[in-house]
Image (cartoon, rainbow, N blue to C red; front, side, top):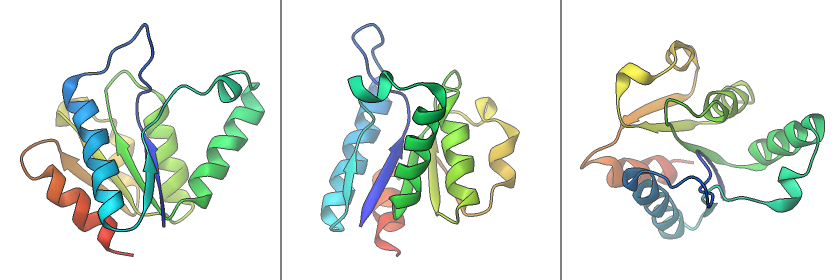
Length: 134
């Protein structure tokens, strides 16, 4: 099984909040426990060099190939809502982890197959349960 992890990419000029880094670690750990493969979002030189159409096609292809989608949402990250919509519209189950409900775009509430998870003490178990359900 494969897990597409959507979320902000850590770059030299942008450090991520600690809770996001911990979230990525929990997703990777839970994936290993369930026999899945997950990689946190990271800067890819070849991907960054693609034009808009090829970049979009590549992201869509990665989402379509994945068995599960787990997303980590920061309010100023425009990619996660798009990736979640692509996943939901292609029939994927999606878990969206966020740190505060007031910053969530309304579109999330209407996406079928999307589960919202507020970051906290139960997040690790929620991720494990989500990935364990095929």
